[in-house]
Length: 189
Image (cartoon, rainbow, N blue to C red; front, side):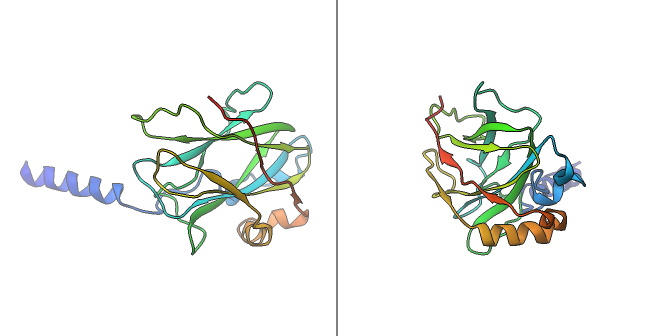
């Protein structure tokens, strides 16, 4: 019984410390084939990052419809500094993400995904996507990792991000991306 318990604990520890072991649900390689040829939706590409990865106070971006402020339930949250996603950059922890969306205006709101932390107010970052469009939103960079008072900046790494995007999903090379960087919106409560 004791050796079975030791085996179970060892397996659990290996699984919990397996950095870079879960595939990014919003990675550019996860777009469905033909996503760009769907003329009733558009695609946004953005990178997210932080100085280091995080475990206990990992931050995610929640997508909301700008007019209704409701969460877009059909779209997964984007992990900013989550340790289980392999970084696509060498100088900081981060990923490049792509979402296929109906035309409209949206916002991202950061949220710490720790059940013991409650977000009181958070910044929002707004953007618009048009049907048939491929839009680059920039890099949303969290200036400190694993904190309860995070701040963000929007950086323009169009060349770097689109080069990696096309390498991971060559289909996206068929149309140039419109650069439309995220804009800071009002604080969300």
